[in-house]
Length: 134
Ligand SMILES: CC[C@@H](C(=O)O)C(=O)SCCNC(=O)CCNC(=O)[C@H](O)C(C)(C)COP(=O)(O)OP(=O)(O)OC[C@H]1O[C@@H](n2cnc3c(N)ncnc32)[C@H](O)[C@@H]1OP(=O)(O)O
Ligand SMILES: [Co+2]
Image (cartoon, rainbow, N blue to C red; front, side):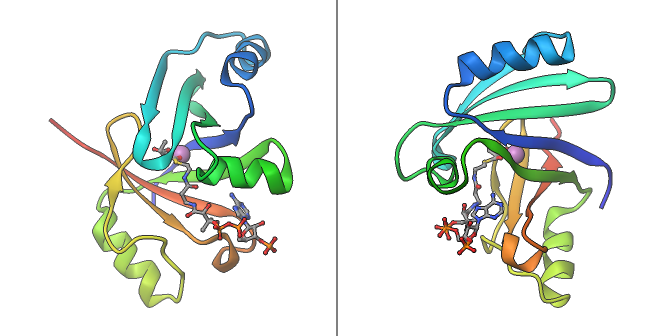
């Protein structure tokens, strides 16, 4: 596993939260993207080498809607960059982690992603991300 790729933050209103994070980080949102398969609208900000992903639910079935209903807004997941997501998924499975999909799926920002259940990672939802090249 490589560096932290982004920190995902669950928000109720991405426009309001976007303004707050633009002020906080003294930067502007460089990309917004709707990821329908995940039921989310996203907005990305960069600070130094780090990325923050704001996530708003687009419907009540979204993981983000459930998370906010249960826990309120806040840090939702930590994403790690990987070179070979299939190999990393296999390694984590062998180590006993619970993966939330059998195969990588399309994420935001030209990535293939897979999630590790928070119950198998000390209460933190982990995302693996591999950049799609080309
Ligand atoms: C934009 C695409 C992509 C990217 O490219 O970056 C994204 O980031 S998408 C982000 C949104 N998508 C996901 O989160 C997909 C993976 N998540 C899931 O599959 C589910 O959210 C889940 C983790 C399996 C939980 O779903 P479910 O079991 O239906 O919900 P519960 O509310 O019953 O939760 C069970 C249990 O887990 C705790 N929980 C839930 N979410 C989190 C979390 N983010 N961090 C820590 N813990 C979490 C929840 O509180 C429950 O615990 P108990 O209350 O102790 O039972
Ligand atoms: Co993410």
